[in-house]
Image 1 (tube, one colour):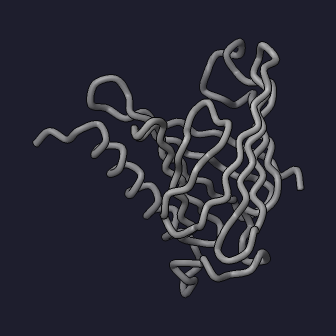
Image 2: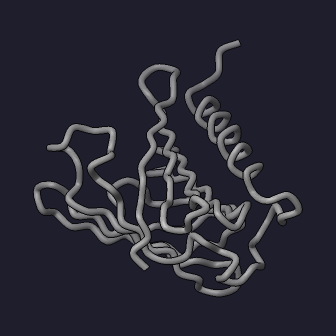
Length: 173
């Protein structure tokens, strides 16, 4: 049986998300959408360790900062600030409801729409699309130290194989 690239990406993300949510403490809620900020270790600002990016140094951005803020009513404000190597700056923003419904992403070169789920206190799953095409699915998880966030990004690759990359962030606030 041959799966489409989209089906492979979705299957990969489901498998990875399942393994991350299993890591939550036994007895933890499977959907923390109603939890307050203390139960959401992802909230705050995070700076990408560009030195660990799996791309050649000349292609890495100068800086990337993600900020997740609680906007109330199971909604977060998500800001992404990127300074690319040539100096171009991008500030994208979205205010998703964390229930998997579609939300607009403004000023992102990568995506114009996304869906966001918060299945465990330390996990955020994000699916991004551009002009109606799935471009990536990302899983953000904080490590027990509370100072490190790992991004696992899955992209449709060439042919039928998805590409998976891991990036590491450090808490700024």
